Length: 234
Ligand SMILES: [Cu+2]
Image 1 (spheres, rainbow, N blue to C red):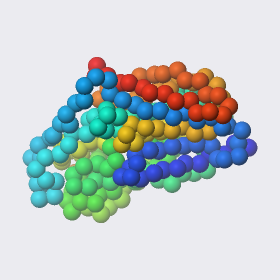
Image 2 (image 1 turned 180 degrees about the vertical axis):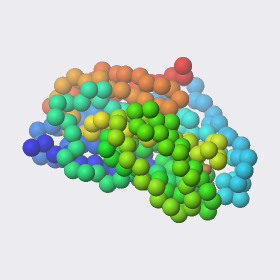
Image 3 (image 1 turned 120 degrees about the vertical axis):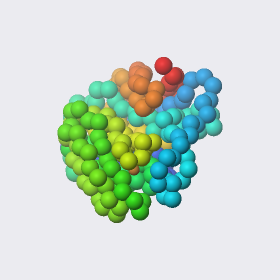
Image 4 (image 1 turned 180 degrees about the horizontal axis):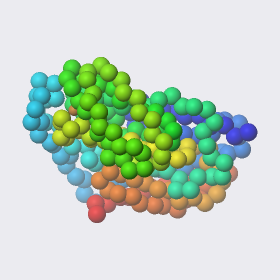
């Protein structure tokens, strides 16, 4: 029986979310890679803070593209376009958490399985608001007082932008995954998809400002398939 589990590493330490099969299955393949920005590095943009400066500060990083010194892209979402047959989660997964700290959503991207829950937190001592721009899932728009946890269930696979109406610079993304083979790149732009059955796959790489690119990859029985994916500004 195929079994899956989830490993979620805190985005503050390493923004990697990897779903994989449990050890002991026959699926031993691995896809490792790096997602990079093509061309010259871009300077991070700052956004002005216009209200609530006593908590929020005077300006914020835009975070629309977060790069390492050598152009690795953080928070790119890498997935198998078509998962292997039978890929599913066997056990319910713990809720993902999405906090609001000093008037920024943390992390910038969170992945949750279809049917899973995101707990929206508010660590700030002021009122926020969470507004979804979902289509396949029911949209919501909720006031979010400090210290309250708002759990939201996401049923349908979709990439959803979330904003705060009160603070125009606040933005985050909920990626609702239809299968377990998803990873989010870390601060160097690196990702790993573990326990992939041997075969040919199309990797799909999405980033909020750079769009979606695909890459063909072949997974063998033993060695890891390694890919470097470049994304460019449209
Ligand atoms: Cu806010």
